[in-house]
View 1 (cartoon, rainbow, N blue to C red):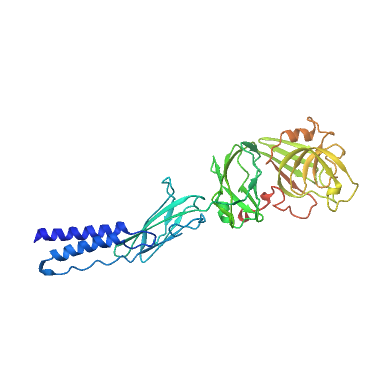
View 2: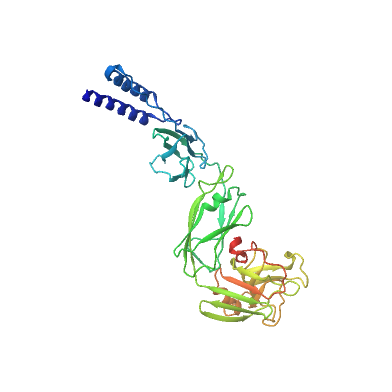
Amino acid sequence: MRSIRRVVAAGLVGGAMTLTAACGGGGGGSGSAAKADLGAGAAASQSAAPGGATPKASKAPTAVVNIEPKNGAVDVAPNALKVGATGGKLTTVKVSDPTGKEVPGTIAADGSSWTPSAGLAVGTAYQVSAMAADAGGAVTTADSSFTTLTPTALAKAADNVDDNATYGVGMIVSVNFSKDVKNKDEVVRGITFETDNGTVVKGHWFDDRRLDFRPEQYWKPGTKVVVHYRLKNVEITPGVYGTDRDEPFTIGRSQISTVDAAAHRMTVVNGEQSSDIDITSGSPEHPTWNGTMVVMSKEGVVRMQSSTMPGMTGAPYDLQVPHSMRLTTSGTYVHGNYWSNVFGEDNVSHGCVGLKDVKGGGDGTSMGKFYDGSLVGDVVVVKNSTKKETLDPANGLSGWNLAWSAW
């Protein structure tokens, strides 16, 4: 009799194992082969039971695994994968591409769902296998295979950074998209900054196409930065995706220039060295903006015309201005001035900061030296101007005028 009981137990265990392994096909539950094996095991047990008694039947699992998209789906959005369980808790979820690389993800604390750590790759086939257990420990499995869509439209993300270039400590990375961005949170997560000293960088949206990045304080000199764009699998706007690339750059020495408009002087602090330069800034009719600005570009000789300035008063002009460095999108520059002789005495410009120079630009002039020693990303702070309006943080790379708490 003892040997007969061992045969019965082995038959039941074999049937249960076959039932678990055969569950799948996207809907959970047991397969026909498993049912046949379980029936055969039960029949064997019944015939072997002493006295002809019928053993108690095992209960079917109550856990149900749900996978979206369904098996065989195509043109699936990279963020459309959902795995959940009802009547039990997920215990295992495996999502892999054709190479066997698994997609990282997390099962919720209550076991009701699994969430991928990032969106899936576009144009890729995936295999999903998930397992859930009910309160009694009975297990259900489900599988699904699907293919993500191949984008037919791309949005270009252009920024103001050149590979391996060196910038000043006030550099703000400004990204401009060719289309309005709808999924802003996903885009922000898709652009990350790797720094060699742990500097934390955060993004701020100025509108639906412009996203600027900066740290809380000015960069530390010598910081090495790599911007990682991972937007290939991010739906920027419905049906439109981005691209992937990496952009390394370095922060150079620190140079902070402070313009005192009332004193007609500019103090330049370069590392441990400081120097004062006589300047002229915006006249009372056209005062220079107060606030923190950043050198956006070094443009050399620039043609400046009074006809391009809305509301310009005074004598008209049309000049080839040397050593021009742009500070705002609206047209504020620090540049050479060869037509005035009021440096350190009066403010006569139309809003720009002028330093003494010669026509065509001279290397040995005040502006020539300042231009040659400056970097894109250097900071220029203007104070004591009669300008009443506050410089808009979106005007140029002027985001330093926005508090970190609002960034």
